[in-house]
Length: 364
Image 1 (cartoon, rainbow, N blue to C red):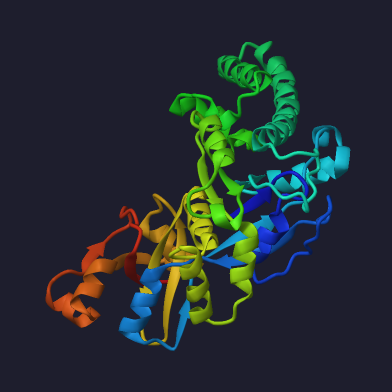
Image 2: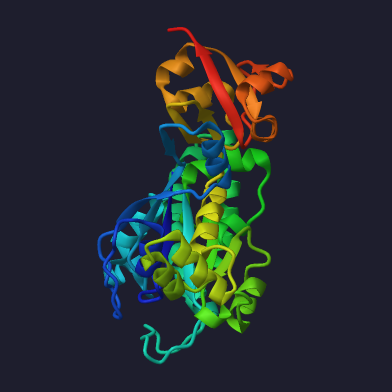
């Protein structure tokens, strides 16, 4: 599961990527600095992992991760191939969610590809290019399904109605994620299309350092624009995040954050929001050798969680012994949790909860 950072050229995508990832993407004050997508594996900040580590004192601690892709800037005409647009759009299609970075700060020293700062216009520019790409895919699908309809297929007739609904919405500049469908329409027809504007999106407003706490009028305009769209929003000062990222020690970072009035780096909030955007949550395994955070999709069953650790665990799944994170912290050890009768034995239909501490029993 991975999320792609998109936006116009020169809005701070590579700088943001550098803040999130140990990989160092090239960053400069001119358009199309990034051509090939940079990929980083980013640790998900989670205080629960730190607390479990202090409790158990394992040999190693392994956090959950999420994959972030820095995709080169899109421009007007990208859907027709402008600015290497076809390559960039293909990179976006391969992601599971979109982090849409918008410039929401004024600075005459930083060039804007369109000559002025206007996040509403910038959002619409990107939206149009993604919508045009989706329209192209829908038109091809309509042609294919229309031929099947002529054979008398009732399923194809239902699908064609949904496809035309999508086409009509896209032609009115509505992103697919903002359209309404029945559960059956979404499961049977929409999800399989993998349309770009149907991907979950987090709008990130890049503000100046003195606006990192309260935002600004640009941010408020973006909030108003996306109020009817199924999307998340976050604002942070990307250059400030880059400065924080350069500090070596925890103490230095904390002093910096205290000086500007933040309780944690905005990048940490962004990673957690991205994790949620990808419909992911965390379970833990905990022992003297290792405390580890594992990633599963929300709604995953116990055997699927076991399979994340090893495919044999899923194949031979017998049961899971489950402790809630809060119980383990409150009682102070697995032994005391057992003595209190707080360990649950769960079977194949158990739906994993965020924060479960799990031991799997299996037989292969």
